[in-house]
Amino acid sequence: MRITSACARLALSLAVVGLTLTGCGGGDNVTGGTSTVGTTNDINPRDPSELRDGGNLRLALTNFPENFNYLHVDGGTETVFYLLEPTMPTTFVNDAAGQLSVAHDFFTDIELIGTSPQQVRYTINPKAVWSDGSPITWEDLRSQAHALSGKDNAFLVSSTSGYDRVGKVERGSDDRQAVVTFDQPFGEWQGLFNPLYPKSVTATPDSFTNAAKNELPLSAGPFVITSIDRSQNRIVLGRNPRWWGDTPKLDSITFSVLDHSAWLPAIQNNELDIAYMSGIENVSAARNAANVVIRRTPEATWSHITFNGAPGSLLADPQLRIAISKAIDRQGVVTASQHGVVDDPKP
Image (cartoon, rainbow, N blue to C red; front, side, top):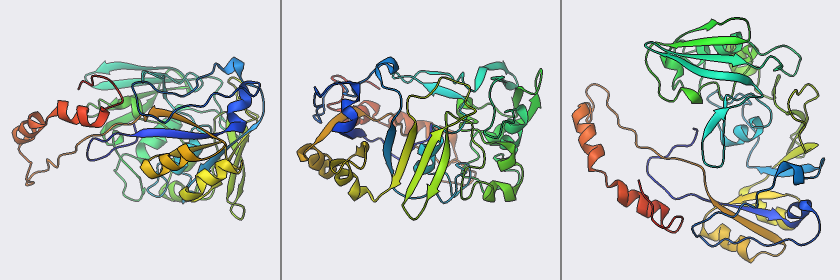
C-alpha cells in the first residue's frame, strides 16, 4: 500500500543471491534459478522448519535515513521501510496471493464494526510491548492519528491519507483496545497504523521531528537496532529480548549502505547475501556474473492515476473524470504491462 506511480508499469524483481545463502538448506547441491521472463516466478520458497537457527543476513541500503520516523516528511523512504519491517508494529500482513490478514503478533483482532459512521475496532495483543517494556495501548493509535490528521501544520508529515478522515480515536473496553470513528468513509482503512509508532514519537511536533531523527528510540518487532555505525556505513539489528512472538531464525541482520552500482560486486565478493536488480543492464550483468544465483518474480506493487478534481481545476467536473476513466484502454494497459509474465492477462 505504499508504492504509487503515475502510469502502469511492469516491475520485475530479481534478487541476486550469493551462493553462501542459497546453501543454507544443507549440502552443496545448489540449483540455479533463471532470469528469463515467463509465466511463473522462481523464489525458492522454504518452510521455516527447514532453515537453520542463527546466522547473520547481510542486506544493502542506498543511504542512511534522514529520519527514522517513517511518518515524517524526511523519513518516508524505502530505506526506512526496510528497517521498520523487522522492528515496528504493523496492522496487517499479506500472503503470497496478496490476501490480507491481521498481524496477530500485534493485534488479536481488527474489525470493521460500523459503516454509518465508519468505525474500526483495534484489539491489541495483550503481550505486545515496546522495547522499554511499556505496553502498546490505544493512546499510541490516538496520538498517531492526531499527528497525521493534517489539522496541525507543525507536524511535518509525509502523508495525511486516511488520517484526515478520522474523527476520533477512543478507548475501547480497556487500554488494549481502540475504536476509530471516521468523519468520512475511507476504503483503504486497512493501511492505517502501518507502521505504528509510540506516542512518545507522535505526541508533539517537536518529538515528531526529533525523537527518531537519529535512531529508533522505541521499537516492538522481533528485532531491534543494536548499532548504527556511520563511519562503517552499517546498521545492525539484533533479536529483541522482549519479543513475545515466535523466536526469529536469524541472530542478526546487517544493513550496509552502498551505492547501487556496488551491490553486484558485493555479492560476488561475499559481502552481501541478497541484492535487488532491475533494468536490462543490471539484469544482464547479474546473469553473466560468476558465483551468483538469480531468483525472479513480478514485483508486488501497484499503480494508479490521480485526477485533480479541485474546484476550478480543468477536471473539476466529476462526469468528465468518469468519461476519461472509461476511455482508458484497460486491456491495452494490462497487455503491455504483463506481457510475458502471464499467458493471458486480464484487467
